[in-house]
Length: 223
Image (cartoon, rainbow, N blue to C red):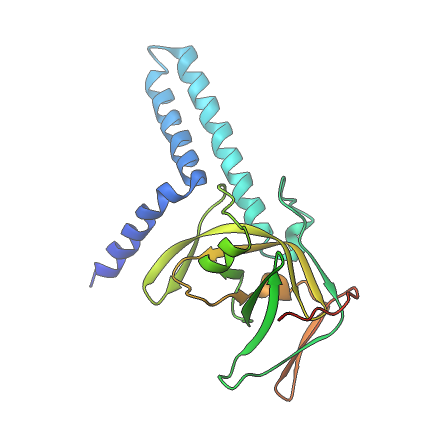
């Protein structure tokens, strides 16, 4: 058996730990629990305090992870509200995107008022922005939550989560939309299923993708 891929994946995961405040918080809580167990006999009060703090810390980390995961699927968003994060809303009328010569669906959009090209990818779970587009739109990583592991041409990388104040294209307006800032993505931006799932319907007719949101919005022309 070749253990090289296993060690490579383990090394990637270890490298990602300092990039996630949530992972560091979980490790700190576990360390406090271990220390509390050690001190339980010589210093019972301190030991109990550390173990209690460790339990609370791990519960808080678990709740934050559940809140983040729930935002990937609109079916669970109402059941598990994400405290402190903007509501994800998609509005608009029908938008038609023709199939490009490269076999993909491309559209011109605005991210917080900044024009950018997007690939519409029904196989992508999350909307993704290149580092260049994110910087131009004034988007920064949240600083909390688990980094998203994604595969690029240069290997597996950790991508940070962010929130788009407003993403507009055609007759569609999305506000408070979750997205990842993807290192190594190059100039490409991707519209993923976390936006498409919030539309009334998405269908294909003779090489045209037709996106129908729930509420009408004025059409946007992006240069």
